[in-house]
Image (cartoon, rainbow, N blue to C red; front, side, top):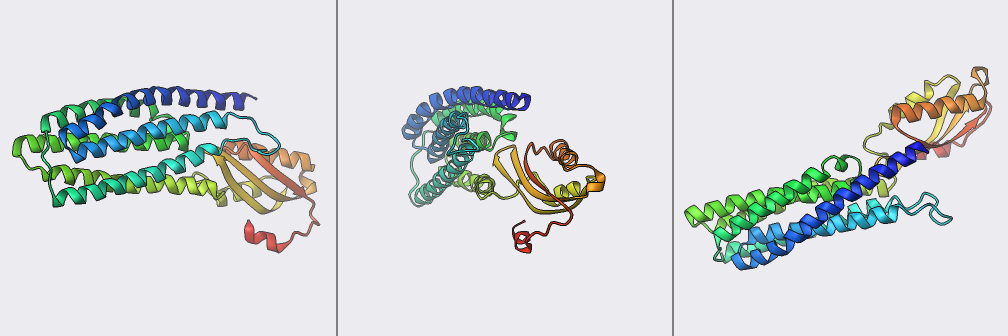
Length: 301
């Protein structure tokens, strides 16, 4: 009960920070979009587009947290926690679309450079940088605990870099008049975002495909279980994650009755999984020494 209560408190902390970040980002996004068209800056438009995806990502993350609060039922026996991972995957796909759009626009601008108002561009970019830094500060700690929040954090982080790039471009245009730097910076922002977006999408897909969590070494888990007194063999071992930080395990054990009762051996293994590998939800079938398991199952272990 205490573990569940702690998890709920963590989620509540995430939600509060996301609401604050959404208020800051959404409010400034409108001003930045208008400023991008007024100044004619593609780099600023790129930053505005990322600010828009930031707001969408934060809103989606908040919806995901609300859905994840719903209790398990007969149709969703594990609850709705995985909805957060769907949100993270959607955010990644959204970032891919924005990045490719900006790269296309940058290519078009290189062919036909536009006149840019560098002073307005600089002022808006500076304000955007301040908003992004505040949002990053709010989300940084929670991003290590939730892929959902991490998706929102990565978008704010990439947008912060975009604001820095726009500031540099505005200063260059102001002192040299070299307008092409605007398109170059816009393209650089797009290329900078792509690999980080791929990392988020890959992590999300690993959970959706029930892969072994990146933080878990399945070989170490198996060796740890085998080291428990009373465990003679381990097979059909599966480890996956319902959502960020909520790992699940199922396995079959062959027990040595001379080392204690099946219940005692099960308690030792459960304690090991919880304390050493942070796996609190485990389904373990204990079998006697004479049990013969199907070798075909080993292929899926």
